Length: 400
Image (cartoon, rainbow, N blue to C red; front, side, top):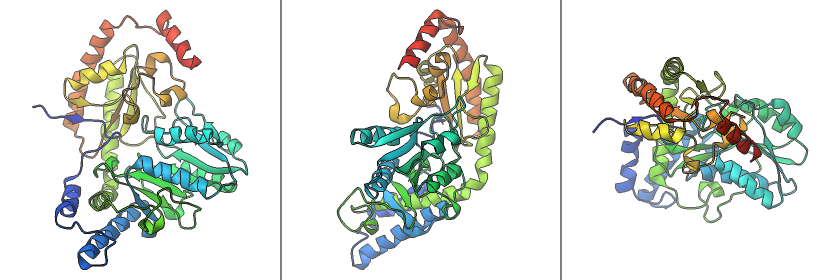
């Protein structure tokens, strides 16, 4: 069996062996309830405390500000619903058109409950306009919720500037940092962020565990009601193996932040070589303000799904967008918001690297990809932006 070349790390990551080793005893030997009074449970409670400190250290936060959740979607929902419940007299939310479905679909649902939502646009490089952010804010704005970095393009938003604007209008500021944590240094002590979501399986911990940072003093109401766990901010018996794993993953992520330039170098090598070897290719997103591990490349005149299936035959894993929207035939809402032409929209592939990605793996991708694109383009009846069919599709997308 050939080695799998995994370049879909924005979807999920390989569990680090040290993380697995840290969590296993809490699946077998140390199964006590961390809230129990007895010694057997108490030792489990201390492991949860250590993990909380490890996550807080990665964020530059205090351990008391960390609430463990089950995933990024729960963290986003808890943050948004919790901030709104604490400010019942304010009914306006500001977010962006390119958020993850965990935020975007929740905001659409809240509109049905009487909230007004402003969806900020992005330019053709996926960037926010700060003047539009400021113009959207009013005294009725309860919450500003934007992502730190886009999961499809890797474009990084100016979160601190947005946060300062939110503060100027008295709004709570939530950041979905699921893709940024472990790739960009964070320090909540000097940040404008009030609420921040992270997910374990994006930083080499298992699926089913995440965390929400809640700045001390932030108006917040829990969404999950029950026991006293997590200082009353998220009821339910703790997922101790997952929490221990997240703590270890956070510790390792903090250590590997110093080496993230290696991922950037490999990403740039992959990107530049593709642009050099394959004609009619473009990078989607800002060339500089991006995550170091992510590139989203548009291969004009062919379908992204055909590229992915062809890469899969060589055991190469990539993505055409968010894993949470895979299976949908609709073009990416992120690339649509950027106003990209149809010929690029449907032929865009996201390659997302990790600390496990090697030069040999990238060389293998560069060895097979030009042939795949050449073969698919030879089969495609469209090889020009002037194609009448492409023009019709362009108009159809714009009409939606």
